Image (tube, rainbow, N blue to C red; front, side, top):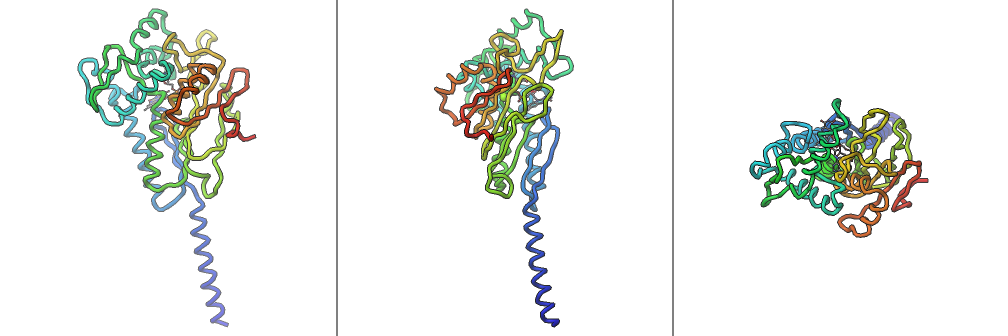
Length: 334
Ligand code: FAD
Ligand code: MG
């Protein structure tokens, strides 16, 4: 009798341990912090090293913020903006790499995405307390410094600004670049599935936690006062980046001024789009192109896509009448 009891208690102990292990495996941990001027959260499966991995992710974000921020006077980018007109400045490989790619995308998009737009962005300062509608002559003046040709790359590591008033702003591409950096870090640590959300700039790695299903990613209803989901996408191993006219804006004399600027006119872009979401494995491209497509409008974006082969991507365009169009209906959950 006592032998049978012993035998069964060992058996139950074994099952209990197995259950505990599988329970442990089925948990995911997330961390949320305010970095790069927005709420960033990362969720990965729980493991012995998950805390350490999340620490490394947020350290990486903070280190890159010190390099890429146009809002921090002490960032490496601010040093370039302040001094690279006097002489070429040697920069980190990250800054060099991102400026190089930004210049390339600016040329491809005919400056709809324009990293040389910094002076104009600061003039409006949308998203900050002292945002204002600039005088017409101030805008006209700022537009004379926004040609991307004013940004020159020298050798393998130097940046030179040909005009003292040309300022680089990487705000429309840097969040995507940061997401890609985090994906690389997580893959290096053998993390197979994760959700990275950098203020709406989302990357879904692998399959949904502990399943073989794709992730379901909701696109927010672009109405300014709504937190509802407009539509949901089914995705895996890709980024979804949305650029919209409803998030950073201010209202003056009843007119809404949002933060995506047309560097041809100097004003917030105005067409029938309210948001553009780009789905692409490269979050860097998704970020830059979501902004570019919002500036270009629907027709020009489709023409652009006909000749674009750098990346495989899909797009969801949401219009001001509440309708949408997409390049791939199969991604949308009905
Ligand atoms: P996107 O469409 O991706 O980008 C719009 C932003 O890009 C604009 O805000 C402007 O900066 C710039 N831009 C506008 N028009 C164009 C154009 N035609 N071509 C290219 N660029 C354009 N926000 C804060 O409030 N405080 C901070 O301290 C702060 N620090 C940041 C640090 C880093 C490293 C990064 C990446 C962002 C930071 N931000 C901060 C947020 C930043 O200012 C932008 O608002 C944000 O990146 C916009 O992203 P988005 O996805 O909303 O829009
Ligand atoms: Mg962008």
